Image (tube, rainbow, N blue to C red; front, side):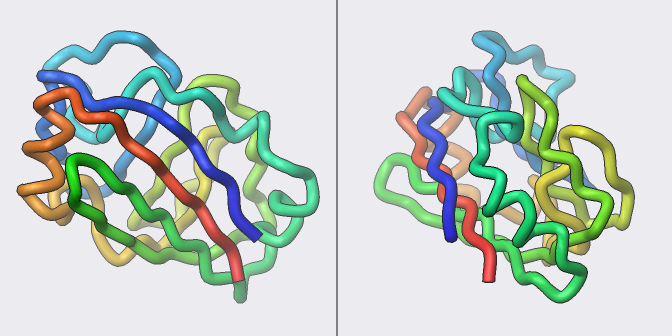
Length: 137
């Protein structure tokens, strides 16, 4: 199962955060948002199919977050958690930690924003259109 989000980069994308990465429906980004990869997302966790959400609530589930922009693609994997809510209407956040809130879409990520390919980050900082695919197995 998968969910697809369309968004775009922004000149303030820096992808320097050490423990999270995020895609948001917000239409702006300040330099302080160093975990944000893309803005103006057309969907948020609250929009995801209930069957997808249920599959992500399995601690054994593998959840993959793939972002494509400017001819570059990066995938980071994490895992599910029974406490995942998928109720936030603005932001989808992947975490290297076990912390869960209404924005969390996966835990135990292999890396955070700082680990994303710098060519991809540069494309996002240039405002490239982005496609995010979140899949669960």
